[in-house]
Length: 367
Image 1 (spheres, one colour):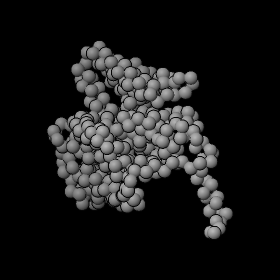
Image 2 (tube, helix red, strand yellow; image 1 turned 60 degrees about the vertical axis):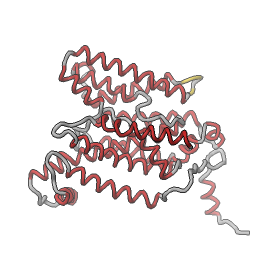
Image 3 (tube, one colour; image 1 turned 90 degrees about the vertical axis):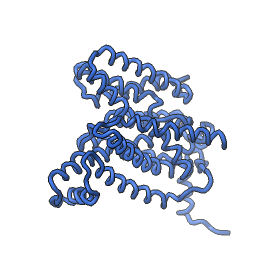
Image 4 (cartoon, one colour; image 1 turned 45 degrees about the vertical axis):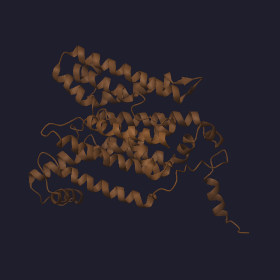
């Protein structure tokens, strides 16, 4: 009989939760190995970013784009023209990187919510967080920052997201515990309430220009992107991503059902509250810099599951990469389809996302 070393025994014991049983390894058939698909997607993201920076009302050669970025990263003096350097480094690169960060973050939140509430329709906006942020942002745009104690649009949007999160969690509790079904209903109900209040604010403002700005913001836009507003969402996505990667076994247990998670020693109520708060906070940060962008957190996790399976150790990192690539491509379409005008991102994500969602729905019914 093969004798196990003490190190091997300890390693196997560490994989077990407090309940003594292993978290479930969710399976979905044969899938592409993570070690292969992750580097390929990361390389595709780098190429997509460079191409997206080169495309716009003024085209910049791809060679010039890579040279400008390399010069700034290495600290060498730029060898490109002043105009090309300004376009690439100060105008387009922050916007493209913000699109990648927001796309990765929305996909990350979508995966987390779908596992936490065990509902395939859950996405970053199902909790009403986006609608709450939109209401506060519309107040600032139409009535001025004085109406919200001098907060900027982004800060007011984040405060609105927090208020919505607290309200949804309070309404979804029963006997001191958050009920996933009630969570969805509370989120949808409050979304309609906040949307109605936003419409009322726009109607009462009587300012056509402000109303146009509110509508554009509610549908999503990265036109105000800059290096200064990139750091916070990037740091938030990084921190939350690392935190959730540590929690992948717990996410697998929650996805298997509350009874299974409890039998594995997972404190379902406490873990669910923590994950919902983390997801809502990240959504608030993303909405504050990009407005309302729908369908990314709903569609991307479903598509990625078809390739890598339901195991969150593989699903989370790949969904982030796919979400980043997807939103960068969508942002390029927004800038070039009706140039010199710019489309709100939410229009493109809805046009692309709705057919994909219907296809996924039909596929699930047939399987």
